[in-house]
Length: 343
Image 1: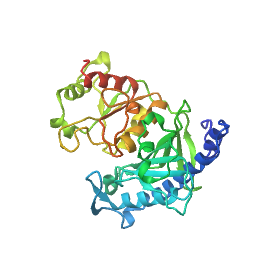
Image 2: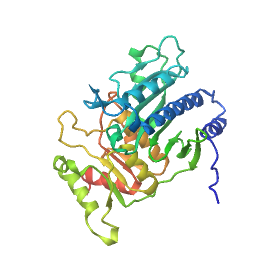
Image 3: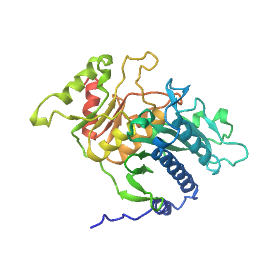
Image 4: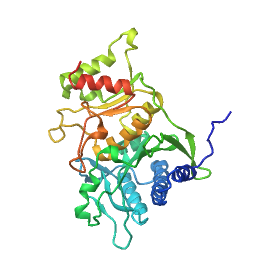
């Protein structure tokens, strides 16, 4: 028997949620719809990456001191171009851009802010590993319209997001998103023959505890004693507590997160001393950690920086980095106890 709800399009789903909010104007629906169109275009390019000249590096370095891939640039431009004209945004923030992205004066401005990683895991494109787009949406708090005065509106804690989610481009293309406030997490799969996302994973719930840990163990020598003790715990055999855990690490945040969301487990990117410029680790609070933290919270999981909820962090800058422990609630709470020195 087919799953209940299969056949519902993403547009229908968004409109159904809009109807439950009498104060809704339809602006948010327009915003999400245009983001979905951008993702469809990116998905098309990813799927033909082996046939087109969009693989490899541009030779440039981004604000994160990382090589910019050609498909990164394409994805960034597509999202900006699709989103800037809709009249719902006051500004945007991208992993690829050092500063906030203004809305051109020829277009009207709105009260929403979108922050995004246009193509997470893009270094894996040429080996055909799943990659994705991560996004978080906020509502502007002030009446400011000048781009130079909007940073305070952008730097809100993750708990203030009105929606968050990701697109994953793999064997199929999926969109997973939540609008918070107990609305749940829902997954939609792109059916190429009709060009539409259809509901395939309704009300996703992550298991309270998993059997998978995901971490780059190549950073072992750069971790502190608390982190090393946590990793040893997951790898130690103990039948009573269901250990050892299975190690699964793809190296593409979206792919590792998506697997653990569906199967249970914990993804970790601890702080390390590998790079003095990045003492808090590699992942970005605004464009990676916060959006996925809201998704995991609404799915019954938890996201922590090792000392408290990711969603409670008051951001200080657009490209702020944080340690990240995210996944099944019991696994992340255990990790938090190790990292905060309670074990």
